[in-house]
Length: 269
Image 1 (cartoon, rainbow, N blue to C red):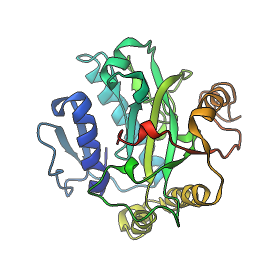
Image 2 (cartoon, helix red, strand yellow):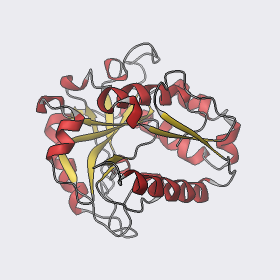
Image 3 (tube, rainbow, N blue to C red):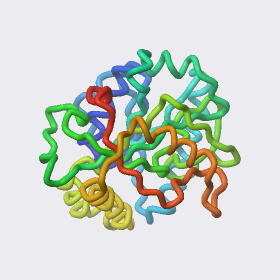
Image 4 (cartoon, helix red, strand yellow):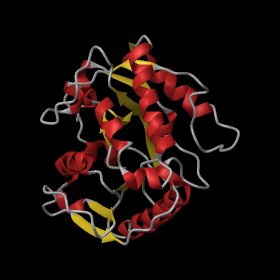
């Protein structure tokens, strides 16, 4: 479900259509004023009535709606992937399997998570994003983020918490070969443009956007570790450590781990 997000939404369509087919994608535009993406093709696109409310209430409503949609889709599909417009679920390329092949082989009951990687721009080293080129040919660094280790894939009806961050009433399972790549922090100029979006500012999303700027700051200033070495450690921490307010959400326990992505990731997105 998206609003004023054509930049990411068109790439979301390209990516998931390549793996799943356009006709198996479902997009809900938040507001009847929203244009249908030019590359929608056979994608199932529906306009929903715009409800202007604070981000906290809006997220609960949004994920309640999407949970019901996913439940209906599971009457016809084996699995459903829930992901925001700037989130791309990917299999480690070294597995040699497509996303469909891999998800079809692993146990998912009721959900599975990919390790969250918040991809950011390293200022002074990486130039402004060229929107004609793949993201990961231009960005090499990411913050390993429990925030994006989301239970994105489900095999039975569930109730997602706000932002897809957890499945209510269930624990989560982090797969060793899945990654959820978040690109909301991929470019400093894009973040600055978000502050000019009156719709976002009016619904209390300023703090959310500022978090993205912090990712760029960390990626720029912290020494990056080799992702291949530290990914298993990050999965272990997130699997065993929980925030006191939510036992079924992962956390990095205040560990700010910045990694350089493996070379094999360069052509994923």
